[in-house]
Structures are given as C-alpha cells and as structure tokens.
Image (cartoon, one colour):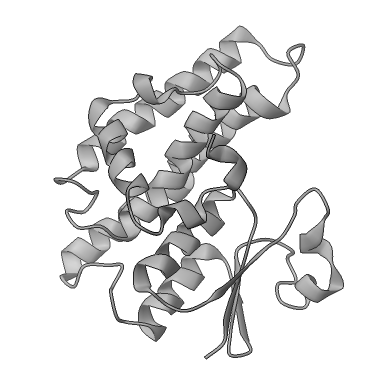
Length: 214
C-alpha cells in the first residue's frame, strides 16, 4: 500500500482530510506544498491535480482531489474506524453539518482572515471588520447548538474534523491581528471546550501548522 497526501499548511480543506486520515489510522506519507513557492503549480503536482489545489491524494497510483470526494473515498476504501455513523438519518445529519461547515463557516473564517491578515490597515473599514466578526460569531452560536455531548454528532468523527479548522482559523486571525479575529475566550463556552477536546487527540499535534503552535 502506498498512500501520499498532499496538503498546504493552514488549508482547512486539507486539514479536514489529514484529521480524517489520522482518525482512520491509515499509513500515509504527508507532503507539504508551499503556497508561497507555487508548489501547487509545478508540472509534477499538476499531473496529480490539474486544478493545482490541495488537498490531493494518491493511493497506489490513483489520484484524487476535492476534499469531499477524498473523504468519501477513504470511508469506502478503508472502512475501519468509520468517520460517519451507521444509521441513515445520523449519516445524513453529519453530511449536512459538513456542507454547512464548508459553506458558511468557511465564508465567515475567510472573511475574518481577509480583514485581519490580507488587507492593509488602510484597506480595512470598521464596518466590514465588525460585520466579519458578527458573521463568525453567529456561525459559532449555530455550531454550539449542534454539539451532542463532547462532539458534534455525539461521537468523534467527520463533523468535528470539518468544523474545527474553520473555527481555528478565526482564532488564528485574532492571533495575527488582535481585535480583528475571534479570540478563544470570546467564543461560546461549549465551543471552546470542544476545541480543547479535539486538540487533546493524540494525533492532533501532527496536523496543526507548526508556526501556529506558539
């Protein structure tokens, strides 16, 4: 078996896949591509994913990209330690939560990062910054209502791995530009506690961007 996982540090879509791989305990080689160096645009990587984006996976010569497709493939190819519940309605609920994360949480965290990291102070406006912070907080309040016990679907799985990276991006925005992101202390209490449980997983430290750990 030869499985290679291509990722970029901080990419929430890639982070979700990495956490899923660790959850399943599938042996794999992780290859980090640098966005600054345009590693995703090299001929070698474009031969794997012609769109030039991460994540991508190569399993015994079979190349696959798009995080949702990769997750479904992993779930079918490696059924041990499932990411989704067995019961049909519970599986549908998790899939809905993943779609919500990839759409609404993604949009909220991206806007925060735009305001906090990618725009200069002259390009920011107080109104847009406030709107971005409110959008993220509204999503966190909705997310808190999804918690069932310690984890999103009652048991640790795909719903947690899909949501966590976006929430952590909101915190990263605050770390980079205090006052422009969402501090952990300002998040709903249950969300903060849930993040702590995800971060306590034995494999979590391997997945977080090294320069975020401080």
